[in-house]
Image (cartoon, rainbow, N blue to C red; front, side, top):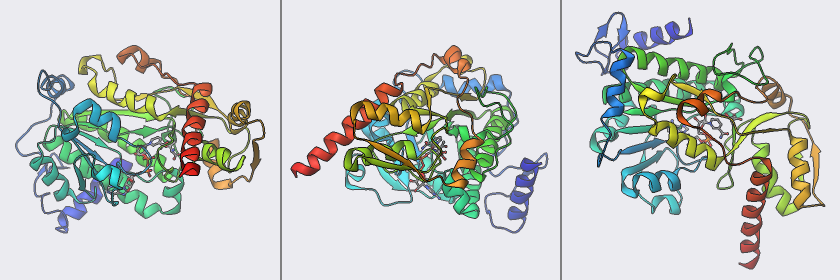
Length: 373
Ligand SMILES: NC(=O)c1ccc[n+]([C@@H]2O[C@H](COP(=O)([O-])OP(=O)(O)OC[C@H]3O[C@@H](n4cnc5c(N)ncnc54)[C@H](O)[C@@H]3O)[C@@H](O)[C@H]2O)c1
Ligand SMILES: C[C@@H](O)[C@H](N)C(=O)O
């Protein structure tokens, strides 16, 4: 029903002339990108994968790259500095602006996305723009626009230009009626946040475009991602990022989730490696288009215990936010990622002790540099 509703919405928008490129219809579906192409079978879909070989380096576009997940380093290292275009609607900091191509790209602007893809001969697209769980509940219309309408634009551009498309999903795509320990790849998914609903829609639409148009869509359900490079962007798992700078700077941390709120988490380096690995995987090795990936699973209490091993004076207190806690309660405690491990060899490197050592070292050296300056 949800998909039909969305398609109806697109149909109405086209009828009202809001989408100039949406002028033709096939089998009752919007075909702003279809031209004369006919539906492709999944077997045809592997054609797109096979076309990237030898010296044929992917030309990469990344949307929404400026906030939490810092894609610059591994992606440019992997594909070459000039072959990766970073984009966002925010103003880039110096280190991003001077490190390689950066463009303004609002994912709500379909024509601009097409222009960037055509002018730069883009072949792979990583679509990261989104509003996260807490930010989405704070502004549902904006989350619906960026996470759903933005996704429509990206899917259509990717299908039109035969791009390989990666879009992350999340543990937030599960809901209170999903199995929690662990959540398998395929199960009931009835999330209660606009973020989760938009990500289930992403998974289904990507799979649909794969079957219907042969789009090479690949998707991973990320756990809560922990990185030291930037500020978290309004998620339920943000506490597990903020605890480290607070522990180093003040020796204290006030947590907005319960001590026992256990969630799946992953260090950013594992997350980005998984993303590159699934994009590199031969199409024939993928038995599905959306995979769970798992690394560690911990509660605030357990994370604090691990921090205490390094900082014996560290104190954690709890001031539980009921909205965030309700979201956390509806998410899995851990994910079953056996299919990712079997199909394309996924294996995480960072468990809780390595994560804590790495994060504290990063913020410790950061603080020491700041003090020295
Ligand atoms: N951070 C996590 O723990 C986590 C976990 C699971 C999945 N993910 C997924 O990874 C992706 C990135 O997450 P994040 O933590 O970096 O999010 P974030 O909120 O920190 O960053 C999102 C980026 O999207 C950009 N954006 C917003 N509106 C836009 C628009 N109209 N056009 C273009 N860009 C726009 C923002 O400027 C921002 O830079 C999201 O799709 C999210 O669902 C993240
Ligand atoms: C889990 C993830 O999708 C994001 N960090 C959030 O909490 O919303």
